[in-house]
Picture 1 (cartoon, rainbow, N blue to C red):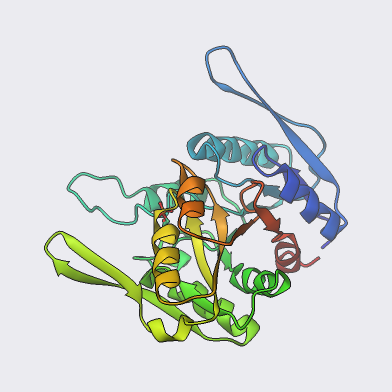
Picture 2 (picture 1 turned 60 degrees about the vertical axis):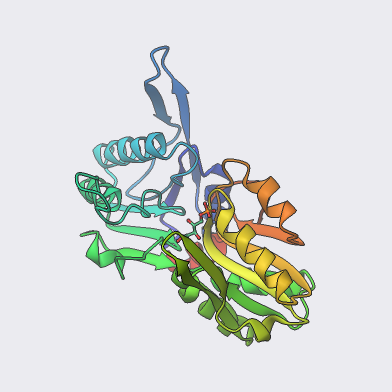
Length: 295
Ligand code: R5P
């Protein structure tokens, strides 16, 4: 499939260039500027050919990033691209997956509808946040390959020197990633559970606190947003006798003082993948994306 050309939208230039290298494919950058009134100016800086992969993470500026992806995709079709794959390493808007209060827009559905309308032959994403929907097929009409970076994150912990590690999912939704990570390195996992103490008080603790005592705990999750979830989990793990706490996430958004919160919770090390480009993105998903695309 070396016929693919890789089109790098502006949030994912680094990952797209790594992917292009692995596929042995030409890289076509998208130039993005803004008109004085704030509208996007976009220019595809090369000939896309007949088979193209367009790469765009929906972070930062998720709404604008989505619009850029949709406009670039439409232009690629107009220019004669026949097979068009979208790699959306971080799929934003998936956490509003229900009408929790009357009238709320279920963003997950609406974003899926917009991406379906773009007419991609395939969407490839990584650790899409699926909680109330159990599979992308419940949201998208387009075929979606939802890959997981959990095994890569677990192997990285070993490379960084984690000893006798136990993998920890910081909430029940994270069990899927904790299990995949633990299986990849042949170790155990545990998951945090919530216990309601009173109508407005909730306690969280690992399902099996004894399992972390004297061991390195590796918290594996899909997203850090404000850092509250992993910081709280890290504190509880240290109280339960964990030796060191590593935090490994696929998408490190790190907003609203997340870093300070995480560091003050006693975390020894924080790392993430390059689905979102940050100084913590030491694990690349380009290899598994290339494998999925046949490189
Ligand atoms: C929640 O279900 C997700 O998997 C993450 O644990 C959560 O979104 C992280 O958010 P925050 O960093 O703001 O606690």
